[in-house]
Image (cartoon, rainbow, N blue to C red):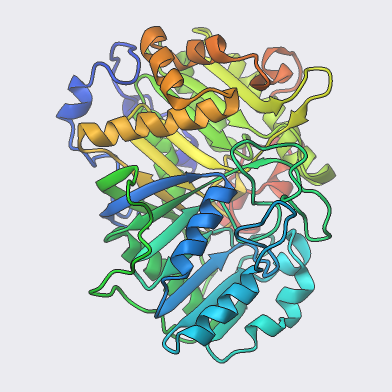
Length: 511
């Protein structure tokens, strides 16, 4: 990663504009080119357009929509993921039973003789991911078919993962975001603590989890198809036989009432490259984060599994210091998965919060984790989503985390939407209200109404917070203690592949 991405470029900051709530003061925003934030080659593959885009909040809604669209597939299903488990049920019943995904795919190829299925999964998922690893390694009865192709992708750099989450159907419909087709991802928006339909690979009850995926049609699907095809060819040394766009769209459209129609869109990827002989690194996702954060005038809303790393440590202070800068609200995970993750992500999150607090002299920063149930015995809701909203002028959903490895080591894929109509801006406001409302147990209309009254996302949360579903602040934001990255961060959460010049230049760590 270029050091410049973590340099405070004051001349690159926006000039001061009045601090106003989303939905007001659009004069300057409307004067700019509608898709100016998206820059092909810098922060996305190309500036394209989505004919429809629907934000699917939480796994239950995504899995149900995917199941309906799979039924319409006639030529091609392409799945690219960090993990995959054929035993998951897209529509589990009250007892957690239902048709397993692998059996579903097998029935589809048997029913339609023109249908081909390609599945490409990170090779180390067999040991590191939550799925039944042996089924990935040795296969199952469901995939014993000449038109079902499952491959493990071993092309990642050392200590890197393939983290993209993409599904393509007949070359005309795509899903992209943070949700893999694996265990521990299905949940409803209610996140009921005792929901028996949430299960892990061993059959035990899975924790409540919040996540997000987007359903897409239109030209932007071509970019996702190209990404999947390139990944497949690199992993297998064979050109894939994916179906291209058809003249007759499938019946399973993403939604009869999508959130967005005809909206400018860009696909941002991260690819560390293939070393001396492989392709050069691509870091669209990092630049898209930087450009979106610096574009915000009034409000930044972030949901992410992790909140640590050099990017947030460098970019957010310049926004917090500005007298007229935006409010910044972050919703992230409280508990980490194991000791190493606690060290590299949990400890560094707390240190980052203390660092950011030094610059928050205007009191515009809040960092929360979601909880539910009585205060005396609460249940945590695990945040796995990767979402960024800047005012009502930018929405991003994808696989990129707010840590180091996601911006230079792992492969990632994100969707960025930039409005060019008042309806698009209203849709972004509504999506954010749905997300915030879910965490507060409030309906989106109440969130939007309160936001309009207060002119502040922070004050909106303060007014609606405190019920059975609530957002809880992190103690580290108000505590004293270490602020620099944890010793060993360069090894545990590297900013670039080991041994590269960019890795050696990574001087954000005290190691």
